[in-house]
Image 1 (cartoon, helix red, strand yellow):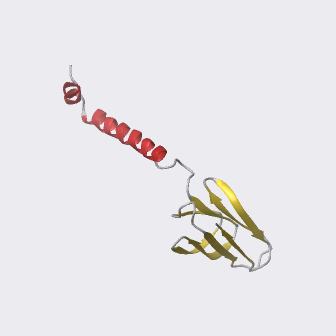
Image 2: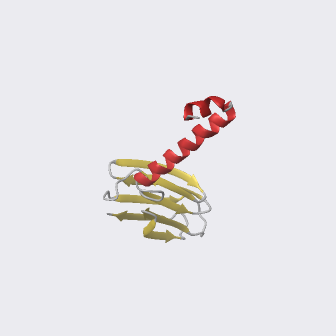
Image 3: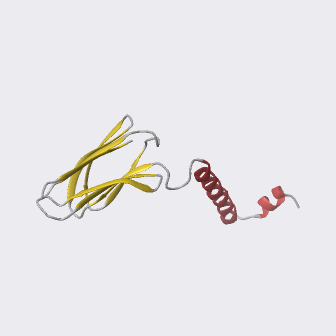
Length: 124
């Protein structure tokens, strides 16, 4: 019995599952081949209030506005300089914490608890 004969005997559900399984395997191979999960750079904002800011990585500038904890994925190479400035948009004394992460490791971290305060960081 050949693969072609087996394929022809399968119903549509089995064929869909087989194609899905092959796609999953190819996706895993692609993730491993291109540096794995957790590579690249991110800016993580930990704050339970409103904030705005700017993130610059390489030639890309992102204006951000958020509320609550968020992680922003960057398109930078590991050699690119990353600059970020994040500002609290309220008068609370709660802590705003910002982290720059490269390859899953925190490379720089700053915080402020000042009302309408901000943090500014640059890493190479």
